[in-house]
Image 1 (cartoon, rainbow, N blue to C red):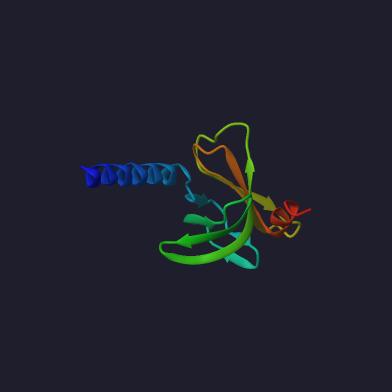
Image 2: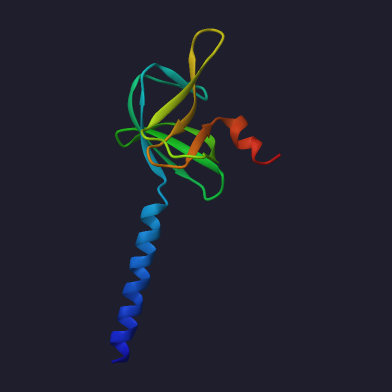
Length: 125
């Protein structure tokens, strides 16, 4: 009898943990329409997946092509007033005409990922 109650409590705890993990997404995808720079790494136009590590607003973003990490950069999670309806990469055009990846919005998420060292430093000032 006591073992059954313990098993039920453990199962309930595990299911709650899994439910919370499902809502705390730390991955997404993006499509680049142009070649862009991420830090000193050049990325060609195409589909990529992203994942990040960190629990606060400052994160370390990894950009992957397939299972291979092609770029990493510091980034910052910034709350947005409303969720985006689709995944969107945000680029900045540099004076020389090249483009830099400066952010991401992920479908259904009420935050924006600001990319770059300046974004991560903004949270520490």
